[in-house]
Image (cartoon, rainbow, N blue to C red; front, side, top):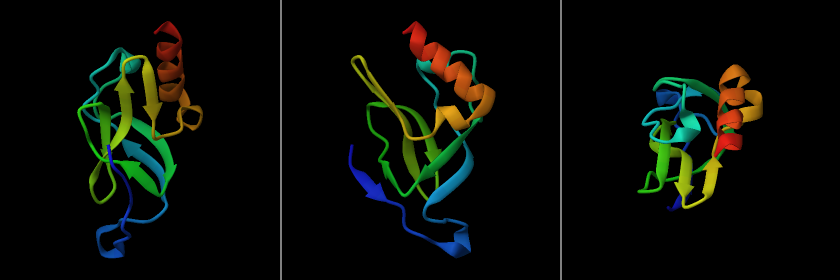
Length: 98
C-alpha cells in the first residue's frame, strides 16, 4: 500500500501529527479476537498506509487509513498497543497466540 503524510486541516479537526485515541473498525482477523468495531487505541503518527487488500483494521484522520495490516505471517499496526491500555494487552496476547 502507498504510505502518505496526513494533510493538516484545522477546520475539519485534522492535526498532524495525529496523536491520541481513535477508533478501529473493520476488525477481520484473530489479532482482534475479543474486540469490537469502535474499540479505541492510541496513535502517534504523521504518515499512514492507504487502505488495501492487506488491511485488517482501519481508522480515520481526515481520510481512511490502514490501522493494521497482515500479509502471510507478517502483522503490522499503526497504533501503539503498549499505550492502548487493556485493549492493547488483548492485542498483544492475541499476537502471542498466533
